[in-house]
Amino acid sequence: MVQIAHYPLFRAIPIEHFSQYERKNVATAYVTVPIMTIELLSGGWLLFQNPDVFLWSNMLLLGAIWLSTAIFQVPMHLRLMKEASENLITRVIRTNWIRTIAWTLRTIVLMVYLHSFL
View (tube, rainbow, N blue to C red):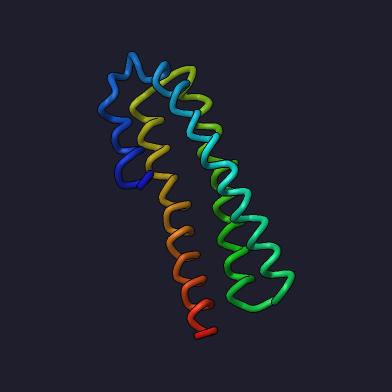
């Protein structure tokens, strides 16, 4: 949803108002950070319970998501709150593909893992 709808809609915000918009947009962290934390903790707990190749893969993908968030998304969103630019908005959208692909692969890995119990 974020990659296909939310981030591309950034381009519809007039650049001169974008920083003001972004200061409000970062409130989405109140939803995403707890969910991402639950993902990380539950992934670690599952791996601790059963160090399976699928669960190791899950944790590696979670690591990629968190690393991408820390290296790309958070710093760029902080910059956008101060100085918006078309170039920076494009970089936010492009670098978010890392997380989108990792979350998609996680879904596949976990579906295969759960299917093995059926």
